[in-house]
Length: 271
Length: 338
Image (tube, rainbow over all chains, first blue to last red; front, side):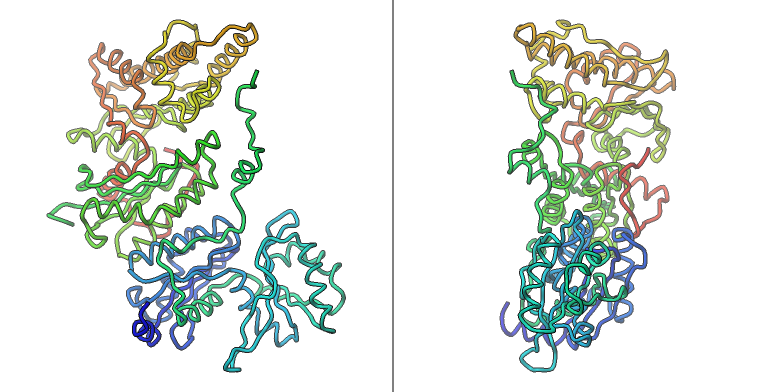
C-alpha cells in the first residue's frame, strides 16, 4: 500500500471484526479512535444461522452502513474448525463483495488481549489463553503484559509459541517461567479452564495461577477488533484470498495418509 | 437484471465440488463453474469431509468470481442468490451457505436455500427449455437412489428410495474391490462396455411386490463373495465381465421401477437426474423400457448431472417465484429430506 493511501485510510477507519471460533459468536465494529460497538450471541454454536444478524446489529450500533466499512477482520483460529470456517468464509466474501481488504487476527492473541486488563489488575505477569482441543490437548500460547512505546497502553506480547500443547506440557513449561520471578502469576483464560481447571490447580503452585471469570473467559470480537485496528494502522492487510484459517492441525485423514496408516480395510486383501 | 432478464446466482458445496453459476430466467445457463476436488480425494479412496470443507473455503471466492466474470455480470446485476443448504456433508454445506449469506448481505440480494435433490431435478429445466411439471423423476447418485413424483415446480413427492446403499455407493465399492478405483461410476461404465453383462448371474433385488424402494447391499455382498471365491479357487477375474454383470443388475432394477412408477401415476415423462444418470447403460435401458410403453425419457447432459451451481440457481428461481421467503438466518441441514 502507498504511504499516502495508508495515511488516508488511518484518518477514517471502520473495521468489522468477526469472532466465531468458540462457543458464542460475536461481531464488532471499531473506528480509528478505538471506539467499539458490538453484538454477541447468547446461543451456543449458533454461528452460521446468527452471523449476519450479529454483523448487522454491530453496524447499526455503530451507526454506519456496510458500505462504509474500510476493512473486514476475522479471528482465524485456532478453535472449532467449523466455527473458524464460518467466520473466515464470511469475512472473505464480504471483503470480495465490498472491495475492502481483510485482516487476520490470531484467536489466541485476541483472547490474551481480552484478558489483559483484568490480568494486570490482578497482578499477574503472564496471560495464558487455553482452548480445549480434547483428550488433554490444547491450543495455547503464553503472553506477557508489556507497555507500548508511548507508555499509555499495555499489549500482550507472546513469550511462548502459539501451538498445540498437551495440557501437562504447557503447565510444565509455564512453571519454569513463573519460577524465574518470585511471585509471578499466570492468568488463565479460555474454555481450557472448564476442561482442565483441576489439572491446572493440581499442577501449578498455590498463588501462581488465576482464572478469568466466566464473563471474559470466552472469545469475543471486541478483542479481535482491537488487534485489527493496530494491524490496519500498520498496513498489515490481506486480500480475501490470503485470509486463511489457522487450524493448527492437519485433517485426521491427512495425518494418517502422511504417516502411512490410512485405513484400507475396505480394499480387497492383497494375495 | 440485465437486458430484461432475471439473474440468479446458484452456489453448491454439498460434497466435493465447489460450484457457482449464473442462470437467466431460471432456464438459461450464462456461466457454470465447477471446481472438482476429485484429484485430492482419490488418494483417500473417497471423500474426506474435513478436507472437502477446507478446500471449499479456499476455492469459494474464485469460483463465485469466475461465475460472475464468465456471465459478464457484476454482483449488482444479480437478482437472487440460491444456495444448497442440504442434504450433504455439514462442513461442506456451511461454506456455501456462509458465502451466500455474506454476499446476499453485502450486496443486498435476496437469498433462498435450495434442497440439493430439487436442484438435481431442476437440471432438466436447463437442458430442456420446454419441460414443465408434471413428470416422474429418477434421481441416481453417489448418495441417492430415489423415485420422485413432481406434480409442480415446488412439489416433490418421494415414492421410493434405497433402504441401504445408494446406487453410486455400490458402484464405488465394487469398483474399488476390482481395482478400478475411485470414482467408481464412470470407471465401471467404461469397463462394462468391454464386458459381457450375462457372464455372471448377479441377483436382481426387487423387494416386495410393487415396491418402489431399492436395496443394493445384498448385491454388493454377492459381488464381493464372488470375487473372493474366484480368487481362492485361483481363477483369474475378468474385470470387464464383473463390471458389466454388476452394472446390469443395478440398472435393470432401477429402470424397471422408474417405469413402473411412471405408469402407476400416469406420467408420460421420466426425467433423470444425479451423477449416475450419466451412466450410459442406465440411459440406454431407460429409453428401451420406457419407450416401449410410450413414455419419454429426458436427461440432462453429463455436466448438468454432476453437482453444479446452475441446477441450484434454477431451483432457487422457481422457489422464489412461488413465494419462498428470502432468509438471512438460513442454516445448513445435512439430513434434509425431500
